[in-house]
Length: 344
Image 1 (cartoon, rainbow, N blue to C red):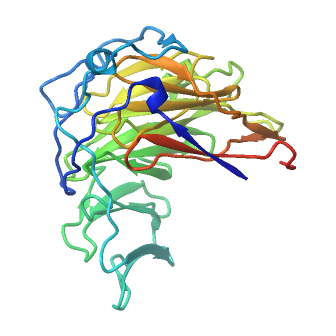
Image 2 (cartoon, rainbow, N blue to C red; image 1 turned 60 degrees about the vertical axis):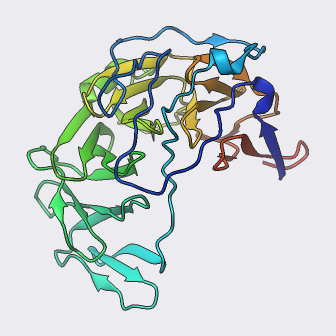
């Protein structure tokens, strides 16, 4: 494998360095002043437009990055995940939630035998798990590692199918999840870890309206990722089919959903997007496409092709995408590529 370190400085839009604060449960909110997410006085940017303008694609960096690209964060809002000391392992056994802290005996936090999934926040030391009793509705719960402060996050939500837990917002106060109506249909939701409510962001009907495949029988949320420093989720719609057969799904569009208001807007239309990942400081968006990589400064909304030989590789009914990783300082991208003469 070749490992290529791509310097972002050649594009002249690196964010200014700032000291990282210690982990906390709240953080200053960045302002998105030049995109479809205008600044607000609340804790998240708001999606006011149903459809955004297409970003400009350019090979030429801005002349003055300081003047052209205003700082996205009023102050650095990176939440630095840290492993607990001693190490903690959260796992499921026999349908129950278990926690093992290094040097101690494992403890079980449930005894119902109906736990279906679990995810642990490294920001605020909370554990979120899903439950689905036989013949009953699903629910999502938050708890401390010792079982204290356990609260249901989905009170009042009608979750008759299974749920799939995705990830936490930057400050650990919200979680994104998919509610599976059936094996081939689902909805995108978010919930607050304090138990104050769950919000349907994109239902099956709405996802069917934006899915690219007109012959799809159903659709599932795909490409779900939090925009760092905000409560905005990027997502796509993946088509599903009742009949068997070969279908290759490739993300080609990007939608935004505001987990505070429920507003949804198109960021990249069909054919112009791709699989997205965000730099840890939230200033840059990396878009992986079949024909290569593009980098976008979120403030300026300008796309810059990256000159590396990146290509996704087809394997029958799916594509394998070379691995990408962001270092914590967000000043480079690590890309793992195949050698030209290497068998995929």
